[in-house]
Image (cartoon, rainbow, N blue to C red; front, side, top):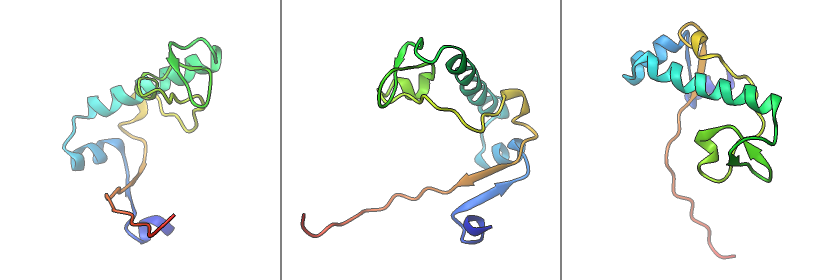
Length: 104
């Protein structure tokens, strides 16, 4: 309520509703979540066996973050791709800002 009430986050009853508003095929969101889910499963079974570097050290199975060099090692609230269609989502609205700092 705190963030949705201020317009910083938006609630969607389902992944299907989210995709409709974003004009993205549901299959795209399902595939992204499935990859993330599979990486979390592999990470739980073999924490240091992944092919990508993880932050701050070690290895990860998460390709999306691993390719950046700061791979994700810890996974929370992971949704299987097959459940995305009916799961509720809270989505953060990100707005670019310029931060100006005067001095050191």
